[in-house]
Image (cartoon, rainbow over all chains, first blue to last red; front, side, top):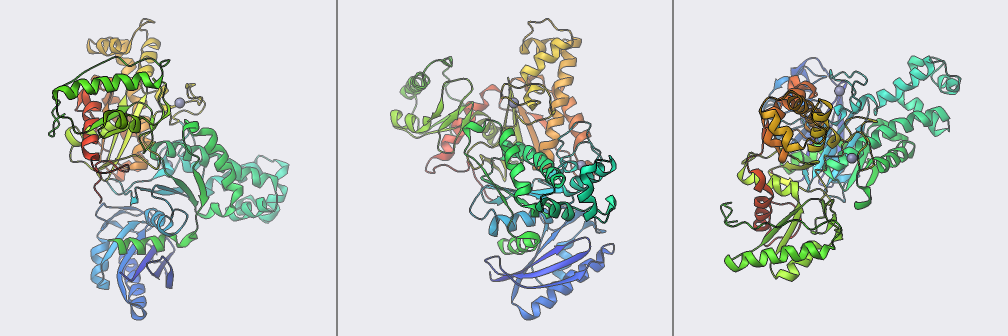
Length: 314
Length: 294
Ligand SMILES: [Zn+2]
Ligand SMILES: [Zn+2]
């Protein structure tokens, strides 16, 4: 199969790209997302596909969407940011575009992209951990994307790491993403400011003197400039990530773990603490070959590229 | 074992001690197999061993015998002149359940064996997944309590310190059982309604469910199968497990909570699974067992 289209349906934007069989993006197009109007979202996706179809010989479409997707990859059971509930997305889009369509959870699509063309391309057993606002991920074992029985596999952000810990939006206490995400990073920084600690002056200045304006990128930038507090905040998130990845490794035994998402842009400031605490927490380490923990390579294009490739595989 | 999974003949021997050389275990196995071969036309041999078994059949580490990076499969194949495959005991138990037991016909399953510790296997796409090095499914040392009970592995708060035979005995003692109580005694006492035994199962069952919630969230199985000695307690163990799982599973309003059931192949599951693995591995080397792709 030659060219396919990958679509990344986000909360604010919908991006579509024509992707070749080597995972290269040949052309892209994007629109604002009419998030709360499910029919309008479908119309927008179809419009993007038709636009790309005029210039390129498209053979299939893969759509990555946040939410629970059924195992047959046709229905979105529930999407947190879009008004989809049991939405037969595949059927609707096939009708609107006249092309075969595959629907996939966005984290799975990104995992497939990194597995096929990015940080996991030399391996068969692979774990992606995406560190953004929350923590997400994807699993490939024996070269097969693991979707789980109900299409909700790899909801790793809600693994419990602290009993009776911080409350999470999912309703549980102590979920991993309450400690190991970009949100946790920013929350910890703000708490540090609120506690009146005077070593945060530099960090606070970068946010214009307002704790509420502190962001992940600001903290990362400060850390890259050598700010000790920012370095410490990132290494704390790295510690939680390393410990959790040690657990996932015991369960799945991947050959490589790839770290993606916005926070991973901090590079070794995040990856080194991850590696260090991974090693300290991995059970029976003496009997295992060392496992590589490396950065993602496709950035925020992983989902689009992965969705396009999954459409090709189908 | 015959082709249909029927066990035709069984031979048992005690496991040599930890202090004996690897050759002692090897010799005992060779003798047993040789005896069985005098009576039966055997075409392949499968071995399930507690410990870390690499994809090449090397036993990297075994807790109860003195194997360290032992090229077990190769040595046995050599000595017996017949194909020998080796896998982790929980993995072969899972294979037995998948072919002939509680997981027959299923594709996405978690299998746990509860004995002294916790053994585990991951079934995805209808096959037991061994991971990159053959070490997938090591659930026992997942941390469920930060700064929790000290585990012999050197870490704190490992799951098997809370949900295993060892944990059951500890919980029974804490609930008022005699100091020298054993696991089977706790199970027997629970059967007759003894309160410390019931309390111990409630406690261990709950921790089993707490740990499962994390695994189910990460792997999304359609079924969880519990085997091993402790599973003989049935619902006494699994009702609190199911309750804790249903209570803790993230996104539970939008997903199906998988059933948690007792293994069906019983104490011979490991034997049946190892024989099945041997049969299914004939003519192929390494990789996934019983593979079927999506
Ligand atoms: Zn949560
Ligand atoms: Zn341990």
